[in-house]
Image 1 (cartoon, rainbow, N blue to C red):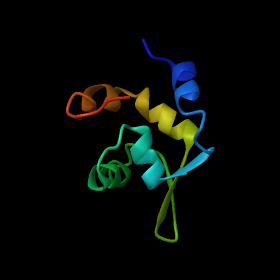
Image 2: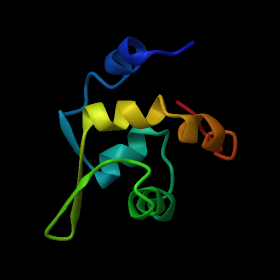
Image 3: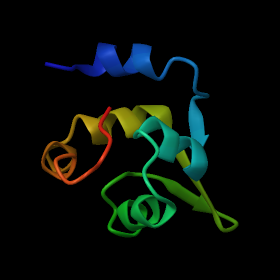
Image 4: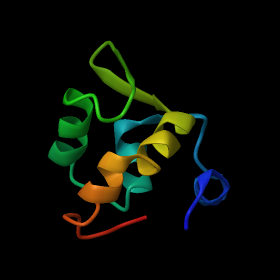
Length: 80
């Protein structure tokens, strides 16, 4: 079972606050529209400042450990 420590190590090279592009990479290269949909549905906690999504790395880890991601990742072509 993948836990918080696993993802902290996996995402160690990313800054503590990531952009939408970096977030997409962290989730295995998901599409832009898919990433924006996750933001609009508030599945991933984030800040939206001056038309830019900013997501603290801890919140990305919270998401990949969430029940929604556990179900959602089955539909994705790539998984982390």
